[in-house]
Image (cartoon, each protein chain N blue to C red):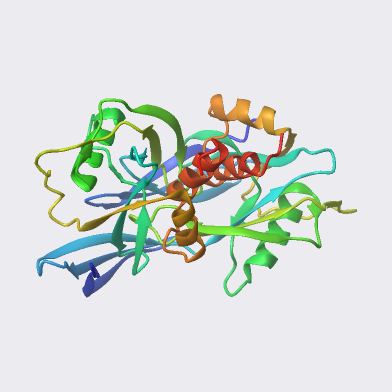
Length: 180
Length: 180
C-alpha cells in the first residue's frame, strides 16, 4: 500500500543553530489534508567504544531539554558535508581523549520519525589509543568521562542515569553479542 | 561535577499540534551564556508484541519527516494525563486489531536528548487477543499490519525498511533474550 503524503505547502517556522522547524500541509491517502510539524536536524554519530580492559566508554553531560544529567555513549552532530566516519573520530577525540584507526559501522536509525528527520550513524571500536594532547570541546559543551563494565552500565540504566535511545541500543547490542 | 545550565530566559517560538518549540537562554558552567533550542513533546509509548506463533507485530506507515515508509513496532503519543499502560493498550488496539491484558514494562528512554524531551515507554506482551471489532485510527493515520519472525525483521533492518531507534532497540532486546 502507498500511504505517501504529498506536500501542498511548506512553511519555515524557525531557522536555528541546531534545528529548523517547518510546517507542511499535506494531502493524505484518503484525499483529505492535514498538517505535519517537522524538525530538521543535521544528523548525528555515536560510538560504542570498548577499552582493552573490556570497559565501555561513556560521557556524562547535562541535557537542557530534560533538565537532567545523562550518561551516554560519545556522540555528536555532523558538520555540513562531513562524512559520518570523520564525525565519529572527531567526537570520540573531543569527548573522550581517545582516538582510533579502526571503526566499524554498526547500524543507523532515525530517533523520532514522527516529528524529526534526525538520523544517528552508530559505529563501534575496541581499538582505542589515548591522544597525547586533549582536543577542545565545543565552547558550550561540558562532559565527564566514565569507563564502565556492561554490568555497571546496566545498573545506570535501572537508575535512569543512562536513559537515551542510542545508549540503550548500544547496551542491548553488546549484550546480544555476548559481552559480559 | 555539576554541569547544570540555569535558564536566564525562555521564549516560546511555536505552539503546535504535536510539538512545541522554545528557545532557552542559559548560563553555562563556565559563566558564559548560550542558547538551547528545545522541542517539547507529550511522550510516547511503544509495544513489543509477540504472537503465539512467535512472530513480532509491526506496522508500516509513511513518515512525512523522512519522506519515507517505515516498518516500526506499534507506538503512539500519550494523550494528556493518560497513564502509559493505557496508551500502550489503546495504540495496540487501534494500530493492530489485537488487545492484551498482560503488558510488562521493559524500559523507557529519551529519543533525542540533545534537542527534545520526547520519552518513549516500552512495553512487551506475548499474550495477544484479536479484537472482535477493529478500533478506529486517528483520522490522519494510515497503517498496514505485518507479522514477522525475528529473522525476517532483521532482513528489513538491513534493507532500511526498519530504521528507527525504538524498533532497532526492540529487535536487539528480543535477540539478547534469546528469541530466534
